[in-house]
Length: 266
Image (cartoon, rainbow, N blue to C red):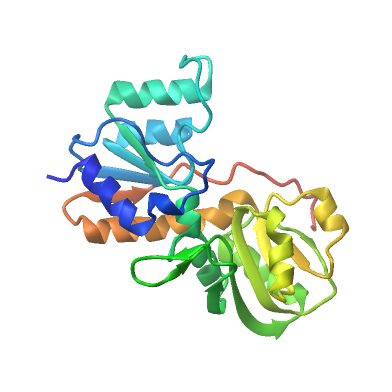
């Protein structure tokens, strides 16, 4: 019988807690380790729709990237989406586990999946923060190369690979060859990308001032959801392989919450 604790222990091998940022909240945030599991639902976010989906499917566990609980709570009521989500999980006996910045940093995690999705070659960690027990470097950002090409050719490649509804970008005036990637909000690491001689940085949640002064770096904001959701299918694959006796599925209802309005012909 597979338990929540078994899956939690396995996730620790994929994305150890020691790799998380100090401010982060990861691990088992709702439920109990001894609870049996036959179905696991994977999603980027544990939002209310995902929690309902887990209940309807009969899942005993949801595994997400972003944490169910991030800031300290003073109340859990049905007046907030988070409160309703926690109440639903507790009432249905569903546990919630997450791997956040530890999965961003881990070998084979978010940013390795992002680099792979974009077809980067010779991928390596920018500013490694340590090595794991297999001797692999780990850290937040990745960089790699693509065949030298105009930004105008690389943009549709990013959009199609990540299934983005749209891209925000700034042309730094250079062809694309050395590419840095940081899934989620990594705009603060622009200096690190520049220091590595990168000409292009794919990330999300960039500020207006980032676009205003690119410092010669092509900036591509592909969105928070598209740049991180790439890891979910890989976690599904690994969990299913590790636990063939259970069913593991990626959420069918969770999509990018950001929408784009475009006039006809754009």
